[in-house]
Length: 126
Image (cartoon, rainbow, N blue to C red; front, side):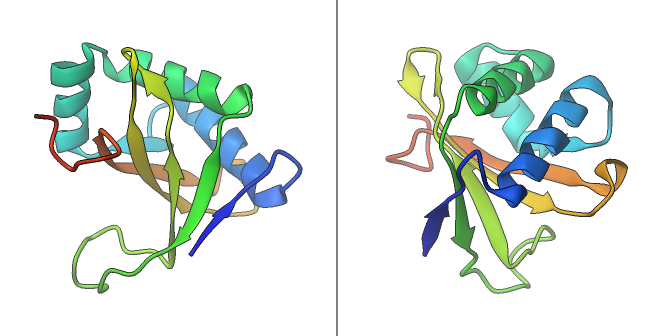
């Protein structure tokens, strides 16, 4: 079940702060290798360009959904109870971005893992 996090939500505020921190400093927003390859191949963006555009999306009130994770914990090394989805428009098309958010009280202890990026209607770019 998905829940949209509004800008007034504390979890949304912490997520946005963590994302901004990860755009400035290494180690706070991690991209799976496949995600980096797909961003470069299909969107023509560097890692930093991609992160900057996602940060702009969030800062401009872009939708962030918190979704109950349904996969088995053995499915992925990034198992969390929830994942967070964004659907920004990049390269003249809407893109589905799935993330995992390791939340913490201290900003330096928060991490966002970008685990999937693809068109929203398909897991394939073709």
